[in-house]
Every structure is written in structure tokens, then in C-alpha cells.
Amino acid sequence: MADAGTAAAVVGAAQTAGLTLATAESLTAGMVAAELGAVPGVSAVLAGGIIAYSNSVKKKVLGVDGDLLATAGSVDAGVARQMAEGARRVLETDLGVSTTGAAGPEPHDGKAVGCVFIAVASREETFVREFLFSGDRTAIRRQACDEALVLLARALAEHP
Image 1 (cartoon, rainbow, N blue to C red):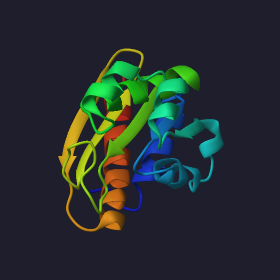
Image 2: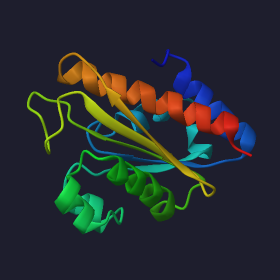
Image 3: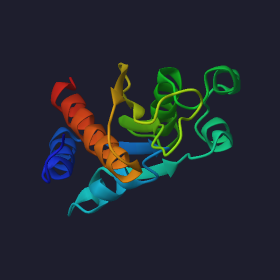
Image 4: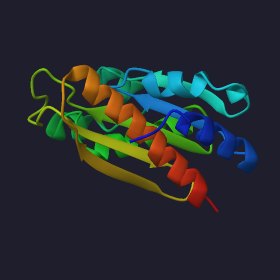
């Protein structure tokens, strides 16, 4: 779980490396971008964020494959991957991070409440992690935001 300094660490690492960031968020609905946006100096590294709550936005704006959405649903590792890659491409950044999942109170697309996929895309690679968070809707969304920041920090630390 991220601590209060994770967003600041992400922004600082991106500034030091001269890298730019973008977000594509479904279940977190802009929380990751808001956490980053609260850090002074973020305008040097955060290009923007796309809230892609609906599948049509995932498809039309981020370029997520429509057949994948139709067969797998929006709570899927492949969808998370394409969302992160789409954010990076559309906003012309070095890194993109995405969140998609079932925050509840009901399962979504056949996935249990708390099932979340987070992806980070760079020019070199994209990685996706699956989580099963617990708690109510608010707690699941908070955990997803925190883990997205942790994964983004890790990607920046490992970036060539």
C-alpha cells in the first residue's frame, strides 16, 4: 500500500528522469491523476488523464479492442494493458498507468468485487498486475489508487 509520499516520489522520480506521465482510469475515476496533481511541480511531468469509465470511451479514446471488451468485459488484464498503452499513445507520454476493476457493491463482468487490474506502459514494455482487494467500494478504490502509484514508482525506478 502506498504511503502519503508515494505521489511525491513518483513526481520527483519522473522529474529527475525527464519522463512524462499519463493516466487512464476506470474504477478510480481520476483518483490517481488527482493524487499526482496534488504534488507541487507536477505540471512538468503529468500530461493528463483520461477517465474511461464506459467501454465506449475505452474503445473510442484509448483504442481498446472492441472484440476484447465484448468477450472479456472491462475487468480484464488485456483491457488494462491496452488502456495504459492507449493513454501513453494518446497523451504522447513516456509512461501510462491504468486501472480497471470491480469496486462493488456487485460483481462486474463476471469478476468478483475487489478484482482489480493495474497496468503500467512504457515505450519498452507493459506490465499488468491483478489484485483482489477487500472492503467496501471506497476502500477498494483507495487501494487501487495506492497500488497504481506504487507500480508507477517501481516502473520509474526500473526505467532505463
